[in-house]
Length: 388
Ligand code: FAS
Ligand code: PHB
Image (cartoon, rainbow, N blue to C red; front, side, top):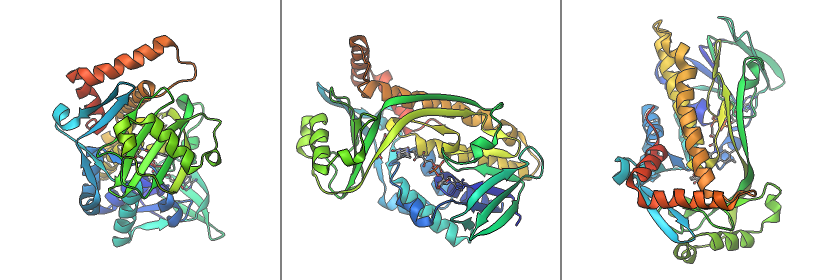
């Protein structure tokens, strides 16, 4: 088999890159470990930055998002003293789109089907070869048969647990990590959202987030110790704890129901540098992980795709500057989002070893967000998405 770009991983970054490159006349093959049904069963991100909305339109996949998505012009933060709103549109003239990653992935699959893109599911034993040469190739197993895919470039879109990052020699890779001493227990329920916009709650019992997918599908999270298991939490216990942590008026409006998804996600900040090694490019979670507090994970994957898409289109006409600067360009935005996600996590969660000094600093950060327009503008600009 031969193609121009081999894409390892058929999650949002792999599918979006494939869609954009094919529309630019560049051939791709996507190699995905799981089934399509498994990829579409994942419940993950819910907030799309402006840049992500723009890229989905550029890929010809924005119609259903515009119809079913919900623009949000602000969000609430709450402390023991009550809740306050940060108005994104007032602070920086932009907003976010509330539209689930699952739906975005579904739209990408449908668009890929429409153009006859090559996506091979249930592949295994993926190995990347000769990435430092001008003739890289990938070997893999599909339906019990071994295959070789020759290509010009390889995009490692295979997430944190994929093979691409580990193809870069350990002596070359520099990894930066912070593991947080808690996780997020999340529930999806067919219930009316408790508020009209997202509510991020800093409470003495721990962080909570009230989010949504649409007017009849709510997404909630509470901070839990890393020792907790999802089976430790009945739906009733979750609803009681969530109610205790949300502002009183939001808690009073909370409609509870049976969870249709319930899981615990650990929180970490992670970056692996460089994001390019020869003809291999790392994209999305393959290169970096952010705590979900800032709603950046999926959106960072999209900005990586933007830089790589631009670089590979330019390389077609001999302009290699995008290829050569891909890692530096992507990492500049990655670290800005890493900082914002770390900051949001630091001011909203209860840390086991938190001192009274730390507590006062958290309160002061939240009071500045409540009272100081320039603090609100900084948060708003980062939350809606820094420019690509
Ligand atoms: P993905 O991990 O989505 O996709 C990688 C794909 O590669 C997968 O389909 C995998 O099956 C495949 N793969 C892996 N190894 C392979 C191999 N060896 N061969 C072939 N294929 C292979 N982000 C937010 O912005 N907000 C959130 O609320 C949020 N919540 C999250 C909750 C959870 C539980 C998790 C795990 C992540 C969450 N994220 C959130 C982050 C998430 O949305 C990611 O940023 C996003 O999925 C990144 O997309 P990809 O880079 O495509 O990686
Ligand atoms: C979600 O709706 O899943 C969501 C929204 C905002 C976040 C994290 C998760 O910061």
